[in-house]
Structures are given as C-alpha cells and as structure tokens.
Image: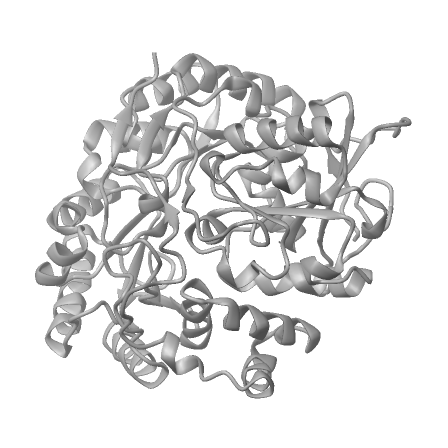
Length: 510
C-alpha cells in the first residue's frame, strides 16, 4: 500500500491461537482515524491466545484481501471482526468476501465466522442479516470480552457458538433469532484498559498529522431529533481527567507526537473539560477538538482552545431558521453561534467552519432565506469572510432509524440539488461551500432504513463492484423500487426489535 507506519503489531501465531481478521471496509486513513477500530486492534492483540491482523481497502478502493501485517489471505482466519461506521461501506464488506472467495451468505459458509458492529449495524442490522453470522448491538467493552469468552468455551463450531450468544447481551444472530428483541449493551464507565495509547498511523503521508486520539467522553444526552449517534449513545459517560492525561502522556512517546485529538460528540459537555485543556497546555501539548455546540462555549474556553493550536472553529447550526432549529433541537446554538464566531475572530482563529442541512422536514424557501441571512450575519458580525475564512458544508437531511424523524421523507434528488444550488448562489461570494452529494444521501437513506430486500440489493451491488454508477443497475437487476424507502414510512419498521437505552443519562467520571 505504500504506507510506512508505526505501532503495528506482528505476532507469531502459536498452535491454538485464534486468528482474527479485523476488517474496516474503507481506506487505510479512515481506519486509522477510527478510534473504535484502534481499540479493537489493540484489545484483541492484548489477548495471549488471539492474533489480530488488519484488512482495509487498497488505495484504489478495491478490497485488499491480504493483511497489512503479514500478507496473510482473508480466508486463512478463524474469525472476521468488522467495524463499520458509514452505511455506504456495508457494500464493501460483501465486496471483501467476494474478492476473497468466501461465500457471502451465512447459510453457505462454515468458516470463517463473521461478527460485525458499529452505528449502522446497531441502528438496523437487517440489511446484513443474510450475510453476517453475528451482528453486535452494543459497545466494544461489553461485546468483545463476552464474545471471546464464548469462543473459548465453544470453539469454532459455528452452530454451537451462535447458540451461546444471547440477544439479551446485545447479539443479533439472524438464523437463530425467532423475533425476540435484542438489547443494546453498553458499559457504565469507560475502562482505561480498552483505550490504547499507542495507535497505528502512517509516519509520513500528505494530509495526515500524527496524533494521539483520546476519547474524553462517549454519548450525548441532548437528543437532537435527527442525530443517530446521539440516539444510540444516549447515555453520556466521561473519561476521568487522570486517564485522559495519562493516555496523552503515554501516547506522546509511542506516537512520536505532542498533538492530541480530543474525541467526543460535544467536548465541553465533560464536567472537567476546561481542566483537561489546562493540563494539556501545562504539559506542552497541542490539541484539536471536533465540532462544538455553540452554547457550551465562552471566551475563556475559546482562549484555551486557541492556546492548544487550533486554528479553525467548527460548529454545526444545521439551519439558520429559528423555527426549524427549534424543531430539530438546535435552537440554543443558533444565537450563541453568532456571539461565539465574533469571539473566535477576536482571539485569532483563522477560519470558521459550519455544517448545514437542507431538506429538514417542513423546510420551506423562507427557511432557506433565513439560513442565508443567518450566515451573512455571522460573516458580518464576526469578520470571517471569503473562501479561506468561512467554510460551509451542506448536506441533505438523511432520516435515520430510532430518531424522532425516522419516518420523514427524503427530500428527493432534484429538490436537494435545487436547495443546495440556492445556498451556493446566495453565499458563494462570502464563503467556500462543499456539498454532500444528494445521490449518496439518497442511497444512505435506503440502506439505513433497509430490510432484507435491500440486503439482496447490497449483494448485487457488491458483485457489480460497488460505486455510485452501479447502484441503479443493481436495483434494476434485483427488481427493487428504492423509492419506497425514500418516502414517508409507516410502522412497523425492520429495526423495531432493536431496543436502545430507554432515556438519556449523564454519568460523570469519579
């Protein structure tokens, strides 16, 4: 692949060692940027009787069926563990199996045994139900130790192992499940032993900065009406300040960097967020943080973020319409973002990046006009202007399972394009505008809300090589009208048997 990397683990398999293929159905850099994939890699290889090697897409997007560590073929492994975070990557799982000569359907396959997890799987595992033996409806810290325990107890006899994985522990086994509900399983705290300090990453690659990723908290209690991650991970748990600093210090040596990437859904929701930044500054670290909620920011916090070396402030107001912001749960951020942008400019931030959506249920042209006026006002009051300073990313709204807006219609390709074009014409003079392709958003909607028929479409799409151009041909070949997944849905849903956490909770670290 041409990558020179650090912190790869190459173990010599012994007799009786469980060989695990850890598959990420996307590119190497995407896998390296996934902290959950990093956690799985190091947790599995900490086990004396487990030998895990990585599989990712090659640089040209084709499945690489030889492992990164030793070049071993995917067919040689006892287990395949799949971590997936994006609906359009589901097809790549099947492309891997086809390319490796492994029967894609579970009923046709004795080995290897395949388990898959990640937000799209948790939300709706049904499209993969014909292909994956075990679909994990839970988080790593609960799922993987129990799964490995059952593998050790039952060996690799497929039927015996699958019988030992109960739905009450977060395991959906399609061919053994008779309609019983599957419970989402999560840890009440974030154990230090599951979080690696050393993390694999390329030593030299354009666009990649070596860093130590540190998960400061997991989950969100705010319940935005469109957000899948916030609905799945609706119990917020904080990592203790001591652990955060410990991981950063250990990582600085192992990863050969003083840069820390702080991972969370809303960083300043952590009760010790300011103290963490102050300690990192004291220890001479640089740091970056993902998107902020504007209502959590003030002048002191922005100054700390700036001291950590961050030059771009990222927020996601989603819309400039107060009516729509109230409807989707972003009302508090709207006015505050105006003030925060101005403060950020005064404190020397070089650019402002904002995420917007079009096609929110109930959106009208008046709402889009309000969004234009809102962005113009942010630019005027803050001073961020021009393609280098003000950056907008515009995406069509994608309805997701389990969210309050799960039954809403996708806006449609033509209308999504019309609305994005309106924003580009109206704001192109003061900002650079990137878009998420409406065609991809439509496919994402179909897969996210799909059933077993969409699963059959996925397999045909995989045989055709995946890619945007093959989607319509695959749908035609299997005779599936995808429009019925894009309109207003009615109950029951394919995913109704998945039971998520009943309500949002906040669990502080000790």
